[in-house]
Amino acid sequence: MNASHSMPPATTEEQTTSGVSAEHAGVNELFALLAYGEVAAFYRLTEEARMAPNLRGRINMATMAAAEMNHYEVLRDALERRGVDVVPAMTKYASALENYHRLTTPSTWLEALVKTYIGDALAADFYLEIAGSLPEEVASIVRSVLSETGHSQFVVAEVRTAVTASDRQRHRLALWARRLLGEAVTQAQFVLADHDELVDLVMSSGEGLTQLAEFFNRLQHTHHSRMQELGLA
Amino acid sequence: MNASHSMPPATTEEQTTSGVSAEHAGVNELFALLAYGEVAAFYRLTEEARMAPNLRGRINMATMAAAEMNHYEVLRDALERRGVDVVPAMTKYASALENYHRLTTPSTWLEALVKTYIGDALAADFYLEIAGSLPEEVASIVRSVLSETGHSQFVVAEVRTAVTASDRQRHRLALWARRLLGEAVTQAQFVLADHDELVDLVMSSGEGLTQLAEFFNRLQHTHHSRMQELGLA
Image 1: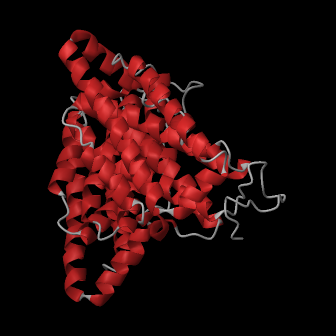
Image 2: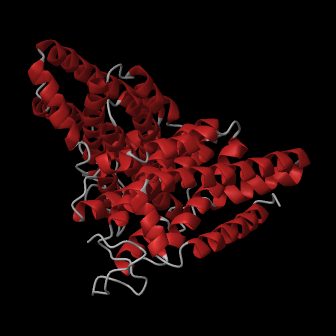
């Protein structure tokens, strides 16, 4: 099926009212992108855990990292059921995700904590936005791998304590959080620019460009509320 | 209850025929030791994954590491139900486990793979031997965190291929595997020497020293069969 988004295919059992079929080529790409994201996050969390001031911090990071790999396994299995081998499928997304992490390498434990919290939340915003207009069988997989695990709640307490005690720390971390948002948006744009099937999936899943503009507004808004949660705004 | 192993306490509802109660102080110690073992293995696997020749190898290591943290969570929850905070409880086992890993730092990817396979299996031998004579509620937790996940099966194929192609590699890895056994036994002895509650648990769980001698025989035997599986004996 090669239907373009400007001319959606006739509705069948497999499709939702959005016109996106579960067989859309972009779905495999979305799963592969998410899968690499989980692996990259796993290795970054374990790397950044070296900055933890104590065993409890290191364990919290390891627990979050393990959750990423559990999510990876869900995506790997979903791709397998669709006849796709996850490793070759996801390597094409390596550069964008590695670039994001390389350009946002934390230099302190607090920066690592903020990155975990803001980064996870931004990823969830992006993907859940797309999932909202996908067929339920696809959307439920996306939602399950982005589900709020509560693991990153330990971040809130630790960051709030630090920024309450120090204005300098608050300003510094607020700038850091803004930089995370900027790099995430930049890399998301690179990914979309390079992968037509993904663009097609995003565009055909709703009202296209209008929806995209609204999306970036919502992203700013939710980012701001998370900054408040952390005591950074 | 301060019954020594030479004079087992009267049997109650909480006890099995082995005479070990689920309330035995050694049970908390056993869980704490296992918990630190999982965390140490997690960080070692992610460290050793750097030697992986490709993404698939790195992902296999990450998947195994994630399984260790899932097991850690089972132990943390079990200790919590027993009113014990896992982090302070397990720190006393840090030095023995970190020493084992430090003294068996692999210098090649194949050494890392062999360590994963042999090390996991040795740990399972040790703990399952103890679990065999513990009350079922305790034993089932020990068994669940040591359950064969099948994750390390990928090791067998890769090591066999390498040692079939090279006698030098086979000799080298056979020596390495023997060293892993030696260091594991040494560190296990250090742990027992330092922690009376654990010795008491092991001793009161069966026929004491006689059983211990038989245990080391069995350990040699199962170690040998694993060497054969890997093509190293």
